[in-house]
Image (cartoon, rainbow, N blue to C red; front, side, top):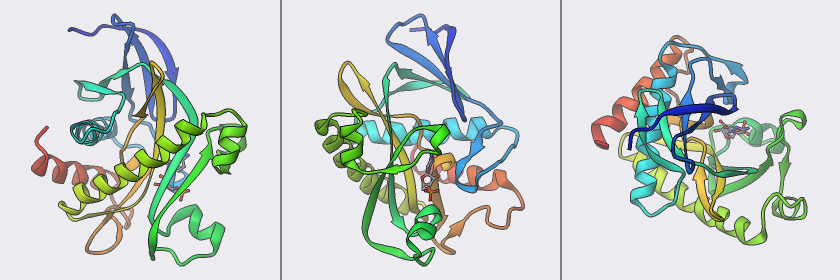
Length: 235
Ligand code: C5P
């Protein structure tokens, strides 16, 4: 079907979401002045939205092909995708394979060290409170999700981590950590939002550093990850 954009439904840090002529589907549009969360600074470069959309479309398609339900329907344009309209669960699920960022600070651990086993953390999605870390008990007691949804989020996040690590290993990239969000579509839990370098630490296998660590050209990291994905995963 040909999708037509209608009214704006929501505007986040990296995306705008529009209603469409199909009441079950929306168009999510990445925009260029997106917040790059990990560095707690804004990184602008021309075409950032295009890199993010293409990386996300490839990774979401890989998840779908491996029977992991997502909100992704199809790519719509260079910087837009069609998604199923979902009721978002206000819990961020962070999956970590290496120590980095807030985990290093909070627990006094050596950055860049590999964890003995993956760690899952949960944050309450709330800008005013700066997305505080919570646990499964908080999430259920605060009625952010049901205990069944929490179990499924844990199971799915572990499956996504295993798959993402395999996919990225093939192209010389280490998945240090990433953040997932989930939504409900007709009561069914799906992976929603995005999987891009906006919300993940993807490191160069050779250096165990971000591709842009010299801060010379912020575009390089996104361009290099997309180039490697496109060469190996022709979606
Ligand atoms: O900053 P921190 O180390 O907690 O982030 C862990 C991972 O989760 C990083 O990949 C970061 O980009 C992602 N994250 C995110 N949005 C948040 C919190 C974390 O994308 N609100």
